[in-house]
Length: 452
Image (cartoon, rainbow, N blue to C red; front, side, top):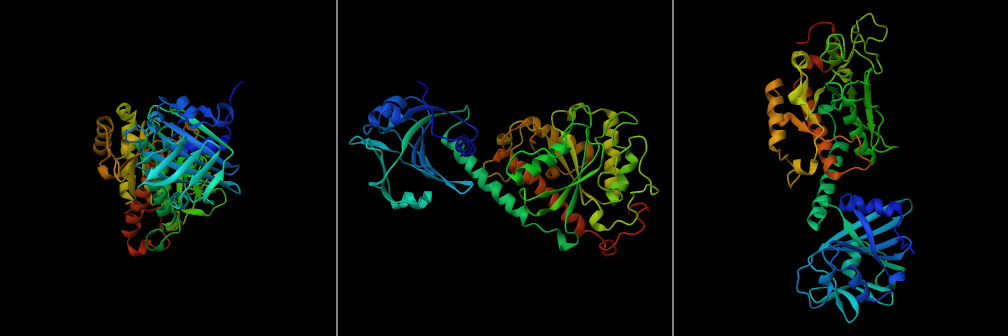
């Protein structure tokens, strides 16, 4: 007879987010294998990392993660750190609280007992009763105290090539830093309130990840992977219209103080891809949302939708040159020439700019332990230097991300790179706004004149 878990799909999804996209294999179930603590340890020893789940009721789970069940025997002197957490369902949400301890349960008098400073802080008894002391209750934010009957106890093997408690600690720290970045961007206001929303232009070759970057930013703020902007292949541009995307803080939240402007991809071939003569008008804010690009025919002031007198809010405040980090070495001379032509227009207009290198393989290896700086590998460092030499962009303004292109779930490490890149773009835009001459902080006139 197949033994099934009480965990719901939603519970397992939350555990994967907590532990880092691991999979779980059921080893023990008290209602099937018996309530003896010795039987539980016997079945779960030599299995590597395990999660022991106690189901207090239909809406509350208390659990701990251990490195090796064999160390639970009272005679064991092996150090055994443990991660404790609670899952509590409230209305339509699931709340998770965590606690790391440098101690772990032991079998004492046929009970599973965890002691801290000689005090019993957690007990599982063979009669399906659980005890937690006030310290555990407070840290895990539970709604009971003392002994309580539980419904079931299950033990799972944690399966994942990277998994260990240090990895979980890093995931949790990453989640904290991700949340700080989210809070910073939510609280952001453009310099001196000159505009209500920063406009960031994404420019790059076909298939470099421009549309995917917008989808990734939206995904992070919505809490799940989204795909509003249709993404093309490495050789075929799907984006044929100029799109000015706003991003909401959640499905029904308010619009955030920035917009991402997506363009047709650059193409090395003549008469293909984004027309170079459209670039100045995009930068000046003369091209409206949903304008249909024509690679062979740029927009003109006579076009019915041409914006003749754009204000500062219509202009581009920061340009992000988007490049696939795996194909920088393969850029053709014609593509390089187009990039330099775009960059010349950007410099002429004095617009802030950064480079965004996409398709980074392993975001966790790129981030340093404090998540504040990038730890560049030899390969990525070489690509950064190539872009630096190619466009003259400062190394500190060359950013790296791994877009959500084929992923089903968000990853906090990936989120940090995406949000850090976005924050850097907003800071660059602030520098642009601060540097504007006074006469340009109002309505922008004579937009058909060359930029100064």
